[in-house]
Image (spheres, rainbow, N blue to C red):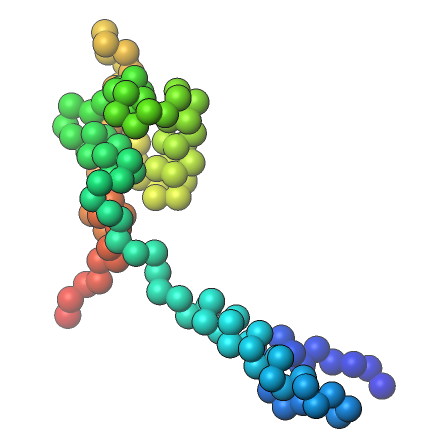
Length: 127
């Protein structure tokens, strides 16, 4: 007789199998934790005074900013600023980050910013 996988996330049985009386209480605790983890709300809105908010404010300005200015404002090193721009701003937040070469160096700015992503709130259309 083949054993089936009946205790997956989608097909949860809380009844105790034969011979294991304590199974129900232990399994119920684990399942309650898993269900709570899946039903957590989305990421909360970003706080105003964080380094991420400061960097986003600098990049959203029409004149943009340089890596040196971000380094001075946040205390990060150059490789950390570059990694933050590539990993968080471009990949995770999906912002359109552009750079222009000027006599002052590279100027970075966010083009076509999406308000729901930058402010951290999920914009829902009203009907």
